[in-house]
Image (cartoon, rainbow, N blue to C red):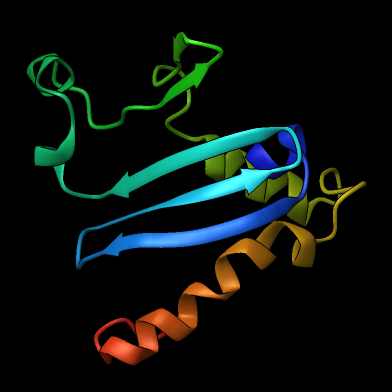
Length: 116
């Protein structure tokens, strides 16, 4: 989604990777992105955990926070369904969208714990 909205990746770094999380930095054509992904519920903000939620999505744009966790639980499934139906990725090839993450494979292989 970010590449689609903010343009191609200029810089891509992986700052931290573990069994249940990863974080890094993307410099896109029109945005700078610091990202964190985790499957560990303990990494969620306390108020999100206390509300019984399992996902948390937040964008900070020009100092404004946009929290959009609700309503996106099946977002990836819906995107994949549209891709398979030929209704998505018209202007971006899969290679363009996946390229930022291909380099992570070499970092994973160095540790021998994160093989692709």
